[in-house]
Length: 77
Image: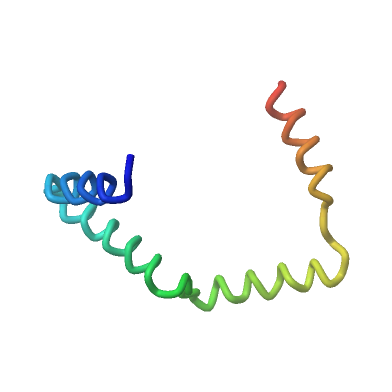
């Protein structure tokens, strides 16, 4: 599907949406994409990020390979 066809398909789908909540969600997503990918964080999220960065600095991390292995074991149960 070409870019022009994708745009037409999106326009058609958007015009068929009657649910205001869905339209607001879509608008939020489009604004999010156009706002230079800046995600607004609240104070609770900022604190969680700060704590996560401290854990990384303190070496309190689990290697990706260990996480993948654990997920594999969990999925195979």
